[in-house]
Length: 77
Image (cartoon, rainbow, N blue to C red; front, side, top):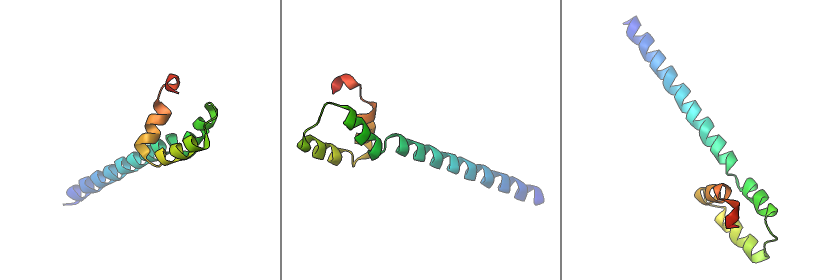
């Protein structure tokens, strides 16, 4: 019985470590494609009009759009 409990505790410990790693990766990805970073990249591009800025800020609300924007080849801009 004690052996079973020990194995169960080891299993739960491993599951907790894996969950923490997934959370760290998710946080890392959020930071990599943050709104702040998108705005910074937008600032390095040719001077956008106020309308383009407003549209960009709306687009940056979606995480997938931010990832696409940061990952896109600069020749598209």
